[in-house]
Length: 355
Image (tube, rainbow, N blue to C red; front, top):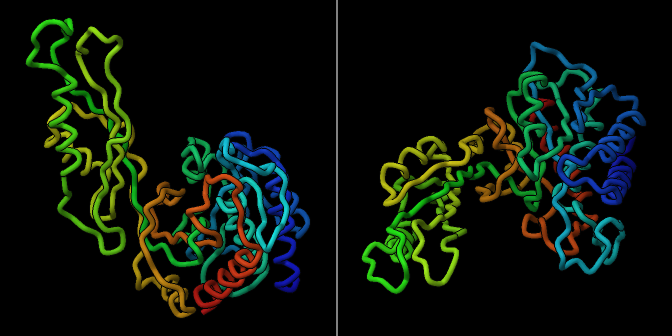
């Protein structure tokens, strides 16, 4: 099939996906739609819960494998929507609808790219296409839970909106629960150990703390206090104040190193919720990245999380759309962005797996 016709089918698939409610863990109907794409091209596929995946026709276990991955779950539409989030429609070149930008556009572009290369012979990499579930919630049935039954992956492209620039690194995430203690008392009595007043110094510490290692691609580790909770009534000094601390980790630290460092130095009790969402990166010298650079694409470090956090191999985040539109009201993607995305994916792979 010619690329223009394949692109139009991908846009039609995106419209279908938008029209189907597919909140995280409720993606069964969008999985059905993706299955139908593969059936229409006579491409064998497998399904695990709501994950749908396939390999190229001439898959060879002796060759390394390139993963193409994006997700078909969405967040719930926010209250600021002025349009029906499940009504895909095009106005002024923009395709509106929930999940159009994050990550429907990248997903259908990767599926079209996989279909383009499916039957080609003599590629230097296998291609594995995975349309995954539960990305938005980092759920146990997402790509992370699927990896143990997939072929070994050597390098990956994760489809997320990047304005078609090459996100060669992505920050990881550790969320901490912090506790600042004090002496509970009646508000009418003197108390030099008020947990709320004790929190002032702790908040200043979090505000001013600097991590030593700075990444060329991702910059500094960013730590932010995002929640605070204390007290039950006006005349009682609480025994403790609880904070939530969000730490975005660059590729110079593992999440475990961040947790060890902060628990040693912070002036309060800290407990991490999870260490599994590590940062990720790929060398700028990797042939996949060099293929993109040769096509005029620039590289950068991404502050947002994706399914890259589940992968242990080198991975690139790349796709049509703009990350600032993700989770926004009246979400959209330009049709031209999808056309350009498919074209770029194909050209990058031409320069990487056909050499």
